[in-house]
Image 1 (cartoon, rainbow, N blue to C red):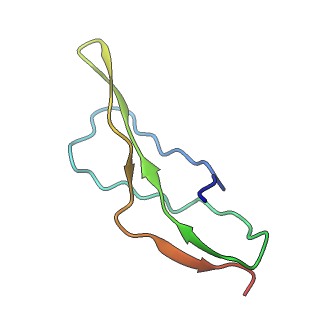
Image 2 (image 1 turned 90 degrees about the vertical axis):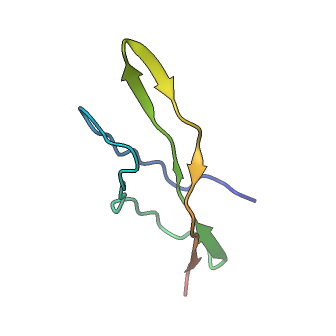
Length: 71
């Protein structure tokens, strides 16, 4: 079962070109148990284009990372 552990946003002002790689390397959460966990991120965007709000679909990272909490 998935559950949110941490929420962190990365924002940009001004023009952002298509296919830009966005790195989020500042999100940390303490492991509360010793169960193996899978970590992944969900990304989406909201932009103002020609005076209108445009939103993208949510996408999940291509690779998940296995974490050994408590070990």
